Each structure stands twice: as C-alpha cells, then as structure tokens.
Image (cartoon, rainbow, N blue to C red):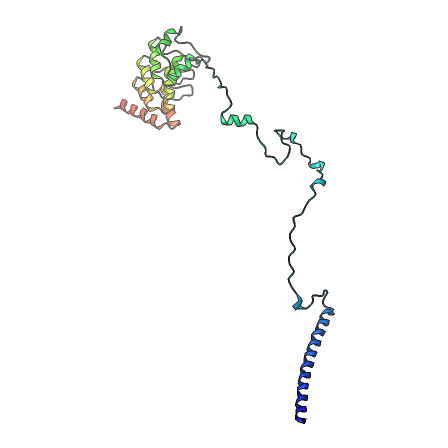
Length: 277
C-alpha cells in the first residue's frame, strides 16, 4: 500500500509539475502580452501576431455628384452664337461645316465657267510666233508697220528665227534693210540670236552684210560676241569685213577673245588662215 501511495504521489507530482509548467508558460505569455501592450517604444497597439487577420477591401462606389446644384461660372460661359455656325447648343457637339462647302467639294453645286476673253494679238507678235499666213498679209494694208518700239514684223520674225515667215514677208515686198530705232536691221537681229538659216536667207536676198548700227557693231560682231560659229561662217563667206571697228575700237576678233567665244574664234582664225594660203 505504501508503494502504491508513493507511486500515486509521484504521478501527482508529475502532473502538478506539468501543470505548473503550463501555468508558468501561460503566465509568461500573458506577461509578454502585457509587456507588448505597455511597451513604451510602441506608439500603437498592434496586438498579438496570431490575432492579425487581413481585412476585406471596401466595395468601390462611384462618386455621385449633384449636377443640379452645379452653377456655371461667368468666366467660362459658352455661347453657341460665338461659333462660326451659330447653331450649336452645346460646346460638346461636333462642329459641322456649312453644307455649301460640302456640296462644292462633291460637285453638287453648279459652278459658272469663267469666260476667257480673247486678246487680240498684233501682227508683230504673230510674226515672231510664226503664225502668219499669206492670206493675212494680202489683207494687211501695210507690210512693214512699226510697233511701239519701231520694229517691223520682218524684224520680229528674223529675231525669233521664223524662216518661213521671213520668206513670206520678203515675198510680199518687206524692206530687208529697214532700220530700227537704234540702227538695227533684220540681219543684225538674226545674227545676234544665232539663227544662221535666216542669216543665210537674208544674205542671199541682198541684205547689207557690213551694215553697222548706231554704235558701230556689225552683224559679224554680234555673231562673234554671242559665240555663234555658223552665223560667223555665213557672214564671212558673204564677204563680212572682220577688220571693221566699233566706237570702242573693237573688232570681231577682239570681241571673241575678250568674251571667250572659242567656237567663233576658231572659225575666224580658220578663215584668216585660208586667206593666207
């Protein structure tokens, strides 16, 4: 019996020891809770870690504005009459252009074709364009009427290289050596422009090959200065004087050297060599 009592006492001690241990643990845990709550280093009470649970997010609600109580500010007042169409009641309505512009773009509106008035082209301009026919010259009272600058239709045709028109005027009696306001002739104008076929025609029809204008320039000088070798050759073949000088004392050869007209210079030099041999 004593043994049993001893064993029971041991069991009781063990249980009591375990209970005391558990009690001490709980007390320590509670003490730790008290210490955490009373910890002066913490500003807030966070509670035990095991008690922390995520809180559900609040449901999102759309903000409801009271549009009835909103009053427009006078500084941002909007008036539809200020816009180009003047018909919109709200600034949020899209701008619609006028239907007239749309119809014009689509071609739905009748448009008036502008009437172009025909301008009367003078005889001199038509001669320079080569648009003269023989019937017109027969109807003309004068064949050599001067224009406002004193130039005849034959001069216009020669200056622009209209060979058939020059032939037509010469056929109807145009003066081949008629002088212009500065002493120019159709031959000088054709040579200055480089129309060698017109130069050949005028020379064959008896134009004065060595005629000089008011400052002493001849057709050979104009052709040499413009570096027109074919015109220079035609003039030299018809007896042009290459030694003639103008008011500045220049000859046709000195002009080609000064103006670097190498093609015309070669023609004059070959002509001089042919005269020496």
